[in-house]
Length: 527
Image (cartoon, rainbow, N blue to C red; front, side, top):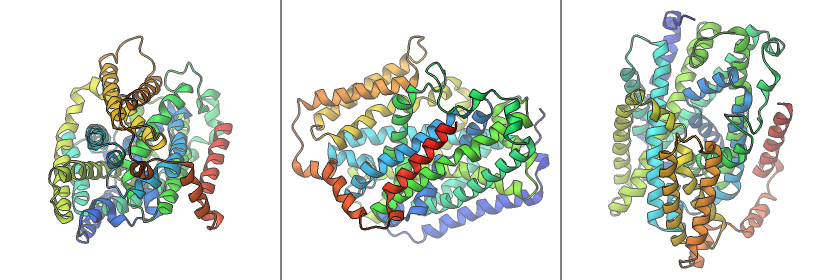
């Protein structure tokens, strides 16, 4: 199949994309002029409402390469990729019920700051450093690289490094100026454009293919199975519990890249409502991003490179004007991931390290330093992203980076929140044992005998928890004051139940959670 996307672009489509890019930059500059201190800059004044939180959570999660990957999976491997999406719903429920209330109760700027309150600064610094590394080389740089490759298909006359630089500068401009407010408001706009554009692609793909009756003629029934057997090489069903659940919890519950929006919520309820709204949006992915891949099996029975499927559908199926809008949504998805990564790293570096080294700095000074950190991170990620093409093996490793580094951090949060016996000594043991397993996992990554990485994630997590239990036997119990503010108890749940009882049923986030679970169950039964 000959790819010739650029010649299909009309001036009106290019105009829509340029207008959109200018709009988000100006929006960032607008918010930048309103900020007064670090709380305004890093946490939007702790005044975000649930629609903004939900849309921003969704947009930050959906990068342009996610769109390409989900559509490609719908074409090649089937619907099993949706397991990452429906599992996110359960993770968001766990986050809203147990973790978010304590994050907000402690009025933290960064998620690792909770570990400081629960254990000590060393534990906080460890979790923050891992998050910074992963955010820079996985979230920002890898998104810039993958997005740059895709956009180069559309604009082949530009070198990859030029595309990456332009993307980084545009996202960096409004992020540096506007902080989290700019990120969240642009994310909300980008989420709406992304969802609307995805619905249009789904409709036009359905219309062109003739719908599911035609898809069924060229597709095996097991292609539509979401839950796969234990022999499936990509996603065996036990891996949902040992890997997908744990990695999803890290991503949605402990990763500054995502949770910063919830930390900035106007109230605990707004954070919980926003999390449930994000869960609802995640469910829609099956219908508006994976389905088009299935329809494409009829439209394009043979395609050379599955990564070109999504842009091919854009340019082949969409009329002028609509193409520009959806293309803006495609770029919007990329921008949402970049701005979230830049903002989260800036917050982590400034509040977890700079504020510790220079505690005398005022919040106004911290805000200014945060802007400089954002700029520096933007430069580093931009410089690193084009180099990924020279390290194909490393690019493969990046796909498993979360499974290598995150289990010890998950153990710190889970054991810290639910077990009063966990102490600072146990946290140190968890870090040491977890880091050793991380190094061994990387060294023996190519070994034939190694378990599936989703199974290895569960093993790594369990061993880290064991280290916490054993290590805590040799340390002092935390004070009651520390435990009161950082450890969950049934008393907390009962107190929340009493508060929720005074609300109308449609304002009760637990009822929202039950509805989401029912929807997921019906989808899993159907597929």
